[in-house]
Amino acid sequence: MRNTKSSLYLILPLLLLLAACHSTPDHAKYIPKNALMVAEVNTKELSKKIAWSMITGSNLWDKLRGSLSKDDSAKQSEFIKNMQEAGVDELNTFYAYLKNGGPNSNEACFVALIPLKDAMKWEAFVKKTFTEANIKENKKRKEARLSDEIYAGWTKDLLIIVSLQKTPSNEYFEEDQPIDPALDNDLLLASHVESAFTVSSENSLLSDERFAQFEKHKHDLGFWVNIDALMSNYGSKNIDAMTGGVSLANTMWRNSAFSSATNFEKGAVVTDMLMYSSDELKEINKQYTPKPIEEDLVRRLPSKGLDFVMAYRMSPEAIQKTIEKMGMLGLADGYLKEQNLSVAEIVGAFSGDMVFSMNNYTQKKETLLFDSSDASSTFSNYKTDMDVLFAVKLNKKEAFQKLLNLAVELQMLEQVKQGEFKMKSLNQAADSSVIIMNDQYAVFANKKQKANEYLNNERAKNAAPMLVKQHVSQQPFAMFFDYNSWAKRTGGAMANNAADTLIYDASLKTFQNFVFNGGTLEGNTYKYRMSINFVNKKESSLVQLLEFGKVLQQAQDLRDKENEAFEKMLQQNAEGLEF
Image (cartoon, rainbow, N blue to C red):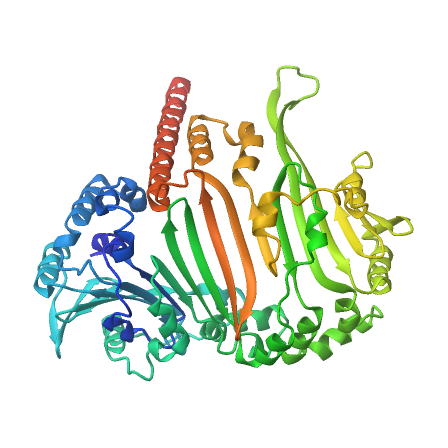
């Protein structure tokens, strides 16, 4: 029974790739409103971009199986080959959702909704693969316990699989956990299947207009998070524990949710995200609508060797209003009063515009000695160097100066001269990190020269780098990572052996950069977009990912061979020491 459990876990990811999507399939109504998370795959769209044989015939499934016996591995390979003969409707949508196991339960319930095209084939498959399973009749469906923690129920056109998983997160914060009375696990699993088949229209997630609209748009992969339910069931308890029992009002997450729609396009994996804000914050969002980052703040960034940049425009007033809504303003002001500060004074110091950049990241190989008296005791090390800069636009310079003065009193900073501070450093010879400010900006940098160049606007006559102009400018939030440029400068450190070199070379040929931006507000919903951009702009990104996955497998095979050779050498050395 336990051997089939690991086999069954492989059904679920494969079913994600053997299902297809049309506009809001009928079985979506079985997703309950209280589901914590929902995942789906649209293989009707995916099938336009890749042949199924590339997936079902891929050796990557061997990686998913892990370190199993050869017998188990052979059974699972046969299982994957026969999946299309298991009665699954591969031209439909597969959903999987997670919900709380019960009001006093420390288990989460995982549920898979799998459309069937031939229930008789599925039943035959169960009898062949799960030989110990006892198939029972229950009303208009059949049920069977497939393993210790997995139960299945099916009708002529829908299969529902239920699994219970432990959720130990609360145990980190609660010493005395209530002990639930012993329950018949068979009855418990069966009750979850019954619950999954009897979701009313009022309790269906489709009754949430936001999810209903999300389902109407085509996407390859879909993901939904019920932030309200997640925080109410798990997050708030842990937050209360970490804040010493101080309860936070659920203003930040009441009725809030998150959705993401991912599409594998040619040359890029693109994910559009929606953050559905709490109803309680609607007025604040309307009053303080996000604005694009200050253009001058971005334009001053050094362009040479730009590896990473992140820019953000927040509203200090909105932050203060949100803290007040959460019922924490009085408490926060009480703590700050001891330092002669207030929340209003801190948020009022900044305009809300900030930018972070990393340039010229390098790792240089150096040879060191384990023992300075032994010239033969050498080892290799990689010394990292980069230019790091973080700049904020000031609103009230005197308020920010007050914060820096406090840091000096607490011996966190040392004032060099008016408007210039440096971080305490154990290495006096090092180019100590500094904070330098003028009337407009405050700049933190790990190199003083870079801070001064930024403040002196030495790039004023130059245009912003094209990639920054394209992906960062005119956005409330933006993040850009030039992987290809960064990797080329760190090649020596990333390719230490044959396996690493294989991955490194393939990554340079595959990945160009990573972009995450957005933050615009429509109604009460924030919109973001994330894209992983590839070097090859003409080939499907899904095909390229599968090819890169094959390289990862080849690299792992090399590591396995090296480990086997090393273990064999150790064994031979140990045998040589025996006498």
